[in-house]
Length: 570
Image (cartoon, rainbow, N blue to C red; front, side, top):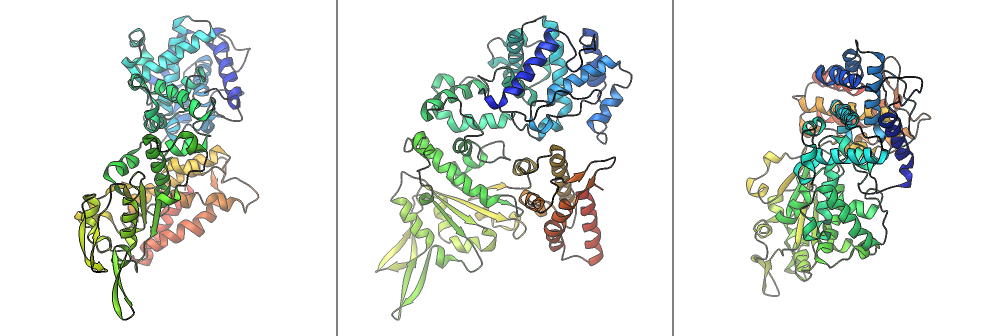
């Protein structure tokens, strides 16, 4: 959807199309002629694509300089245009280095965050731009609107193939034959070329999430169309529901929380698992958003279930008057919490033993009388208790819903019965450091679906909102990721000892105490500044030291020094 906030992005894109594809001019310097020739495009493709450099130890810029070492200045300039188109419109790369010329066409803000794949797949993205250049120039079109429509058709054919009605006209074009929707540039160019019809989304996963969430709004005939068209139809229906045509799927907080269950998870497996299995567990190292994710999933699950059943309207949901809390139940488990608290216990009253219903038994009875609404129980830190003892007879009941089991207790001479209704859903969280998944009883494990929550660099990227310098942010995430890679490979540690993204995000609080908001000093050699060193000393180092307490002092010191060097990039 067109956004006034992105007008500068649209204008610069339109200027690029006019100057390059119509006027055949250098976009950055009017005095330079003869850049845009068929021979130069072919030579550029030959240098960059055919002469691909597979050396993983070299960065993109170094490889490109080697690949274009013998190329003419105009071929180099043409290549810089492809880099600019790759990067100019998204936040992470809006001021990207064009290698062979100065970037004089910069924006203050991109239209969206592209995600790390856009950067790590830079070779594929820039190659796509070069092949697109080749096709546009070969087409002979010289009208801006026609060229943008051509770009849209090429992108749709790349993404959806035979689902597009005129795919046969485009399928033999080099750019269509070579690329699929895994290339981020497809979604970027769809939005830039036709923002009235396409969303400002670079991620295919996000697009699929929107369709998964709102597919009940689609007419049957629209459910067989391609993804972007389904989203357009969904927007039309949502606009009617909420009375707002130009809403944004990212900025509308209530809609965003509804469709985007997990920022670092590109699919809805957890939602589907909870819906059909009814019992799931999030497990992983500390600081990986397990409890937060459980609470957010619970709220979203309840809203989506009630919206799809018609018991909640979109207007009611958006009014913020709907009370989730009455349907979400959370227990913080600990070593002293047991069967007596959870299912049924006994106490002495007036010299007599009296049975008392536990938390879960009461919840089951409450939910059974409220069958039209889902009730979600969050069991936080199941690693801290004996889960088999806690559940007792409930283990059978959570698998065989609405099938009552007699308990060996009575109240007022009536035998207590446990029956877990179909509308109770359970989400557990477990720190893998305290209790590994392999140690759990198989009978227990098979009654739950288990979802790994590890360190996630995409989630960290979204959390680091206070880091304004994109180079600092990118390097910080890369070094956090490198540290966890090292931890996973360290025999004395392993995957369960990863440092969670929540702990790395503490850098933002630390930065508030420093006059400079920068994380690194960028010179001939990049050096780590004090805020990053402080994070290491007060948060990460003590945690790792505690994990290594069971080994000899010298080995511990050596491992910690190696991990520190990795985090500092030494």
